[in-house]
Image 1 (cartoon, rainbow, N blue to C red):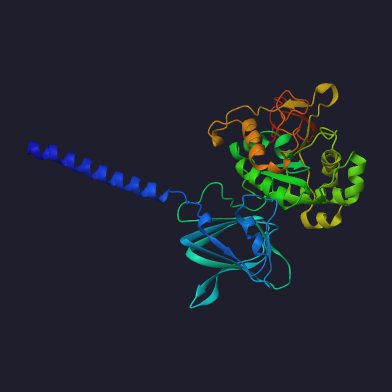
Image 2: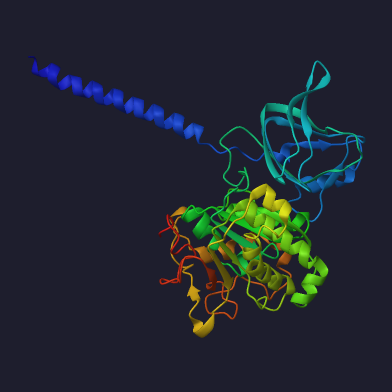
Length: 409
């Protein structure tokens, strides 16, 4: 065999492999280019409420734009082809169509039914003009807080594409208001939902309005929650104590509400507020009191029979209360929100909670006394207690899922 031939074959092979590798790298790199935000290039128009159109892109959740089918739809044009709309609605979106012009006439390009998620992404096919048209001319508002328009490319990670609410949650985090999920529960969400893959269901008891709902959704998404939370129907009103909270919201109404949620979503564990309401807030105390009562109600066929008939009984396995100690401090546990999380490139749960509050709960920054509670503070977000267990006492005292099969850490 010719020795020159032996030497030449590997060289050609190496060159071919190198060329193929470079080609694949180039294609992969091109495919991974993130879709740019082209909102600033777009023009928005509507027959009415024109002065408020600037609210669509002002980066502020305090006010939005309102329209109806009767007064004309929202029209958007852009010199750069539009490949996606990310809309933060004032309320859960009604049924509507995205229309484009064909032969000088508006025609439906896509139709969407009413949806439960207030933040929605809608793909487009590189159009330069479109119209959003509500289905019904019933005079109801078609309200939008913010719109982001995206060009061609890979969808950015911050664009929220919510999965359905967990039908069978592992852990229910019950809290009174948007921002409590980080102020008093620290690194729970990034640690359990993102790092460990636990099915965490955030439930906020009060309806704090569109602005704070959007702030909460942004916060949850940032912390790794991907299944839509539950927003309660109760008014966001200050209550000076537990009796005042029940007076404002109704004993039977609140208990039936949480009883039905437990039966419907079947959480193994519930984590909620301090019995004393942390700094004394009556609705915080209400969350704790409801959790204590409703674990019994959820298993009782005589309690709220409608939800019993629909979902059947359910027995919660464990309930944890913030700052709870039990007799002789035996129920107390301390979470480690300071360990680096792989899902967040080594950031800790506490660091992420602080970042999320600072970035997303902007409406609350005027209250200087509110911050994510550090380990050694009076209302430490690290300290909890086992109020109830059907699976025995905690021994490690650093994990809400301890003693539950399949949840070893």
